[in-house]
Length: 307
Image (cartoon, rainbow, N blue to C red; front, side, top):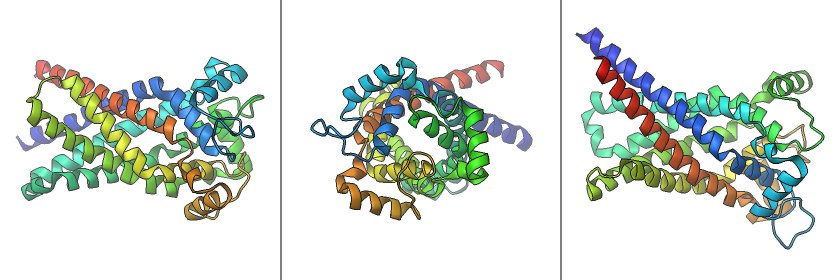
């Protein structure tokens, strides 16, 4: 009997992990242009303003038009293969671990039900950090592919890996890992805690109606809140990932990177790319939780039919 229960729990966690991978892949395919524009904004040294003629990118629509005109429509999905590998891997580990941790915690320690938001934040933080470590090389690869213009420096994923390995060493694939962990841990923690809290409030107010609207709405708000909270760390991560490539500065660490950015470009530079990043966060978080819930419901119903 115990073996059967454990097998079922393992199946449930696998279903949640697979649902996370599907949700990550679908969301990435739809939101990639926002990510491309955000990264281009983040690594530009010049101020991003319509009144500034020195920088290449001066606004969202101008930035999109410039990329399409200079590099073609497909440039909006630059680095998409690596990005898909990143999203699928991250989604599988993130959702699978989160659900596994919270299920275990609430079952073994019922008293924790009184502090659900704290447990959800902690589980999200832990699962986000582990997912980041496992999938991080894909993040570095897609960043390099996105930032390169024309003519291209890299031909594809394998070319990025081989050139980075030869010129910068294998550990270069983990450039910016520390600021990413500092950023992604709190981000995923806040995102899950806020999402679960909003879902609970939604259910109390509307009593389970409109499941699709619920996941979209709660996911959008949770994503925007979490992204705004940790955005400067995301900017620091991207700049550190580009050391040795096209970045003009060499940073000693995250705080040196942020301090150098403020000193050379002003305090508002820490929010470069925030607008497209927020747009992406709202859409991607909403779609991610929506696709996750839909896929999980499908897999759960399928398992019930088999039983």
